[in-house]
Image 1: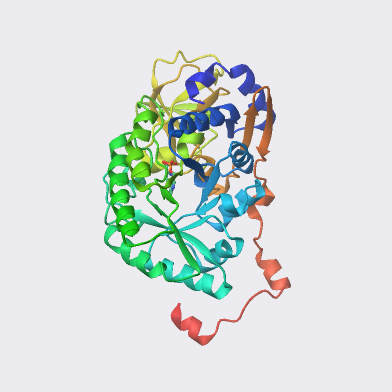
Image 2: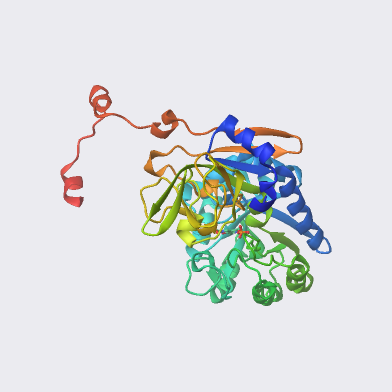
Length: 433
Ligand code: LLP
């Protein structure tokens, strides 16, 4: 849901915002389905499966929509894995990626017999192997390669260049494969990459895919006969304001040589592409103020609800769903800022927003990906609620956090004393600190 489209939906959104309150994330199930359909159609000539990257939006109802479409999931923690199971995914639908999996997380992955553990270093390979040997079962692994490809995205969302923490360097892959082959408890089934996020130029994927193909052919020549899939990660760029979205046909063309040349099936791990434009963040205007020649619209959503503008200087479309009090003609540019006590707490800068006066309802567009999942309760602000619209019906899929939720697990000093919960500090511990 781009904010522009939604500005026509005030009759729907304003009553929902009044019922559920703001800040509020709202998602459109049909938009997720149409994105899934578009990508599946573009990849149809290639034997493939989509593994939705759960970190983009991990709400269980959203995971449910994608499961019903036949997607698998790409998870990066046991927390995301638990969510996937709760949403009805089976172990064989789950790929476990991530650069820092803990030993207990690998234990779980092996015990559950998930589809694939994507290893990102030789040390992780050794660990997962020892876990599988101890449990006396087979683990299916993939090697996530760092293909050393430059991308033109934000430095914080580049992942595929040499010198970054992600993936196994190209020159180490064969060595890991050689170690894996003779070990019965490890089955090397996939070679993959994830070169970054919000990428528009298909040639970047093509470049990475060419390097993967070279590797796969080398492994096949060496007699590695367990490979089943090549995994090209996610990263498909979407429109936030005026970007030209990634051309799906050209994307498919860029990776086709890898799939056809290797004879393997294709795994893709899209996150943002499936959900980014299917969501928006509704926020209510609290105040309008002027300072030092600038005009600020202070709203009830902040960087704790949507951190992308503060963290990446990401530009999201903002529109007025319902105008507020009459008064401002709107010919001044405004900064839309949140209530958090940080100068970096802004949602948008220098926008013309007629009607953005106290009481107005604003929609921040393209907030379906890395919106709620990156939210926090900084300033002790309970995390927002989430609503899903599905055709002619809507429902709250996550309640707003309560103050009790906010303080769950904490103890007052009196409670600690009463429960005799204090532990003695030993001399050694004292010295360490
Ligand atoms: N696979 C792996 C291994 C990943 O690390 C990621 C994203 C994806 C797939 C999905 O990428 P996507 O299709 O969504 O681009 N917080 C940033 C984005 C960080 C992406 C991290 N990894 C943002 O808000 O732009």
